[in-house]
Image (cartoon, rainbow, N blue to C red; front, side, top):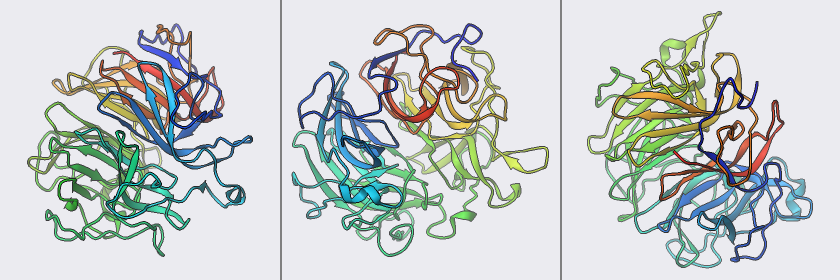
Length: 475
């Protein structure tokens, strides 16, 4: 296990423009006032957006509060970051978890204040949560759905509440879903209605770790997640109604194996298996892409086997059809004949090849560049050895024209420490440490910004923790 070195060079691109690599304590400062010292604390699994002005937004996650002796919990603080000034602003939510939660069992958290459905208010705030779904509409408003978190009465579970935030007014609106997780584990059940038909009563179940996309009409598409099965949902902000589009409905998700069909061929019956913590993109043609995650292997691989995946899927929202585009159909057999995560094939750094493929992983980050190519960084998964498993710091590019992967930077081994270099200065040896469940944004110049997550701090065999370092990658 090693960081970047002379045997495994990293091309120029990464720089650390903000935040100390091993300072995980937050500094909230004054609400609404940016400073050079204001910073969110170490955290992972936060919600994040980019607004129409190019500023980055961050909400909650599993992290450290701002008390004198910080404690970990599910936060509901809202932050804004300006890439022009490299400054954070605390914009809302609480800086501290209540004292009464310091003896709580599990993850402490803050309950939500829902107000009246459909009515904005300065006192409204979603409850503390992690692993929610987010998207930004064409007007620049921020949307939030579900996650694992705290409801209006202080109960923890899988949420199915839908929220909208206006950066212009600084106010939240509770749009739909339930304000409580309900009496049943793990959360509220869904109301599926008739497949393909929108209706006022339709709503997904409480879930977390789903993936999402936005189409050219501002509709949200939602797939999978914990307790979500292999179901695909569509939400129209114009009508405020959900449609269940495909999948096995509200049945037993342990049997949602998926249908791969023929590699490269779209078909009405194709569908990915149930999974969560996948990586998603939208290409320049408006098609959706899905990679890996932790999910269910095909029925002929032992039935009910769950592990990391490395399959790549494309979805056309115009035809409502899936295409399996690459990667392994489920897992690969080990020496005992059991199926486990598919290993990576890195090839040569910087060289595109049809045999290249990232290994099975979950909780990676992804973004699409101005050419529509797909980028993948890190996650929790298997490395080049096929034996090493853990946080990763490899960066990949997928070319839509050739349908081939390129290993671009980072190491091919798990648990690699970061090399921070000089703050704000890109250098050949710079690279973030291995991590997963980070937040990521793309700026107007096509650069990737990477924040926090759970991972390795620095140096060879560095310790793992919640991080609060910010990185910029310039393709």
